[in-house]
Figure (cartoon, each protein chain N blue to C red):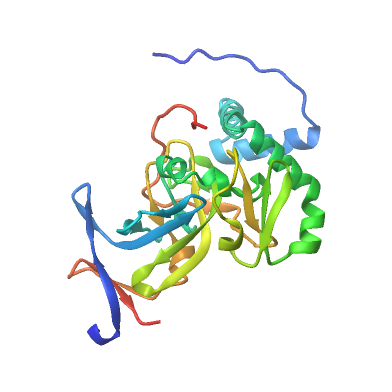
Length: 141
Length: 137
């Protein structure tokens, strides 16, 4: 497996559980975040979209400067059946280990504290979730 | 503490009323409280949509609605930026249009014309709402 691997990210502990993450940089209307390091974002195959970001980060990145028209916003549904209006903004996600730059969108809703990478994002990557080693492994395209 | 309930009266079209009742029953069961639960949820969502809108955002979205046909005709496949109620940039890639705005701008629309996006999104197991106030501007 190693020879096909381009990089990896160790799982991260969230609420005493090790979760798979991918390191990304977000390019928005006011620059790149984070500046030097990567933002480790949890991978969640239960989320259909591209990037769900916390309300706080949405504000910090000033994504109202690259927001989509309200016609293009979505309705989000939690597993509990709660409905949310998702604000959406255009952004670029860079995965430097994969030398990949993806045009996509970030979405949030009032009260959201989660950052998640979803199925739309995963369409662009070949990754293995190596459970025993607690590692997200990035494979050659 | 028990919630104090209020009565809301108004008129809607009979088609809308029928669809609303049907959906409310499907969702909350054939009980007396189903319509009230659904109405409360509908009002909450509407308030959430309306109360966060800034003046610049309203102007930009109105411009989008007004220019939508023209944008579709002339810019399909391209990125377009709308600020202060008019198209201010277009380009083949997001980085062509998503630059730091000059001057005092607090809201802009930037989107790829004709792109098909998910209208309904499953948010997964992690997501629930934290109780907070309204979204800041």
